Image (cartoon, rainbow, N blue to C red; front, side, top):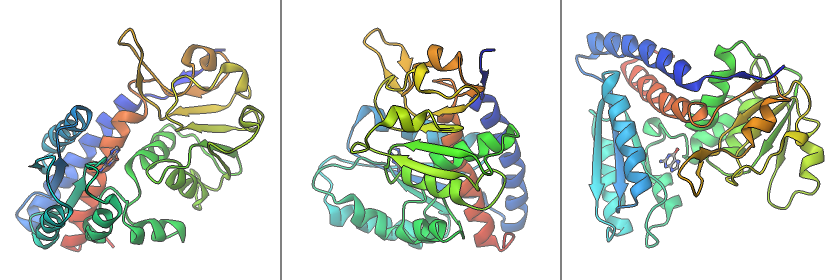
Length: 291
Ligand code: GUN
């Protein structure tokens, strides 16, 4: 039987509806909406689109979304000054510095400078550390979106073999940490494969849950998939003909898996929903209405 679709678009829509209600409640308590500021340095067209989509999604749920645009020639010191000002601004609950940054700026210096209590990207070492020791505060939005998509579909991972393809700080590593947390969508036995891993297809064939986040178009073939496995595709790539594809060959994988995320409409919308959820949670923490 062909796999069922894990519908990120619809799930994200429901989450945004719930968030609008939490934003209204927060507005009652604080007299102001939660604020999210994205900082965009330079004119990378893909980054500009991502940031615009984040701002639009924020505004749709009632978050005060703003974009701070800086020229490509911005120095590291200038960007750190902007971050300091946002850290000190009580109207800002969430700060997001869009990556990648121009070559003259060290992204680690910038990530380290964002106040951990406003780090809605979940990139600051303090937030990564909290996740690693099982006390998550803000986790990276893409892996958090994967967990939430599974949870809302009633898919448990407890005791399952999970394979994560990719070890990036934004997706692969936090994905593994989230699947290791205690809980129904956690408690997995996790293997992380990366560019130096050997026998990747053999390892993937053992997986009850596969998270593909390698950034290589259609690398994962249908014959790598264990029958009945759950397959989550984090990749998004544009083919020469303009169409979109992920890290897995969708049609092949859908023949074998029990669940599979489409591209587009799978993980992508969930990432943005989790950015909004982290921002609302940050506002709730600041207002003392969240433990
Ligand atoms: N660039 C690609 N993905 C992300 C993300 O999740 N957050 C930020 N800030 N930049 C990115």
